[in-house]
Length: 95
Image (cartoon, rainbow, N blue to C red; front, side):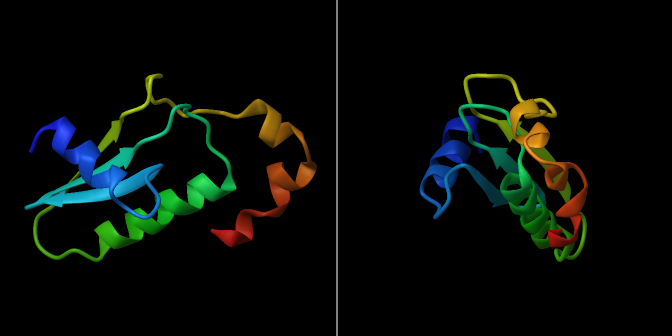
């Protein structure tokens, strides 16, 4: 499966900003965002996909792909995390 096919499958999903594409034993976690910033909503989506991958049986591999214009990184969103002390400490329980 090539990157264009993988991106097309994520684009067709309910939330095209992030998705999981499975090709045999390969699980592609696709970060399909224009920016590379992480907030609680995005982290929750990643965790949900990782839960799906954990439930697979047999051999498997996880490949993370970023399809946005920027290269994917940890994406620290200084504005989001700096807006409130709750962003730094209080909402961890939602994960």
